Length: 188
Image (cartoon, rainbow, N blue to C red; front, side, top):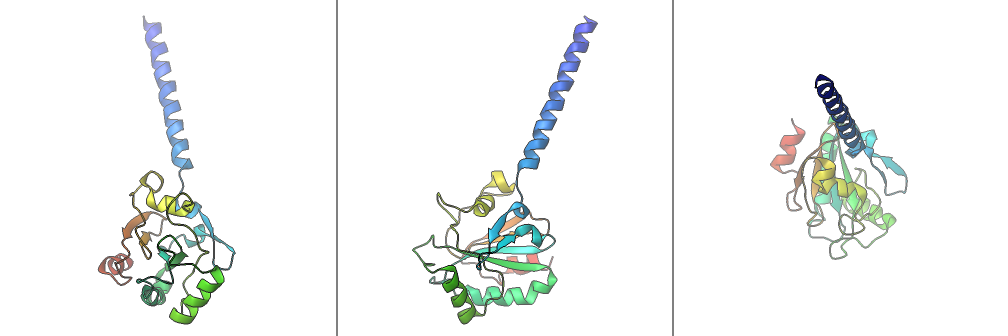
């Protein structure tokens, strides 16, 4: 009887150890913001791990949208806070009524000429649908980001990422770059 109890205890310990290992592997396999690489608007690889220690505002952009004037406030915000470990990353996307039809070169020229954009712009991607970019899958799926589910509802939706690469919040397109939530988050 004692021998059977010892065998049962050993099996339980082995099963718990295997369960712990499986859980550890699952945690290690989940990605963080820093695990992604994207292409910048010039076609070069941009490793998001280069942003460790910075607060990041990720925004999907479009050149022919009612919210396009937000580029001006995004640039102003970037210039005001970039020396305080903050960066904005713009992801042009043509997912909403074809409001970003241009090539990367056309988008860069438009943003520079009309809004003086100096914050990093990435190559045009898809932010929803079957061809959604993997970074946006991470941003919008709680099972991947560990924080929240969201849908990208329109151009200029904003995602806040903290200095550790954790998703903090999502702000709808109508919420302007100088909203109280963004400024409060930046000044924490």
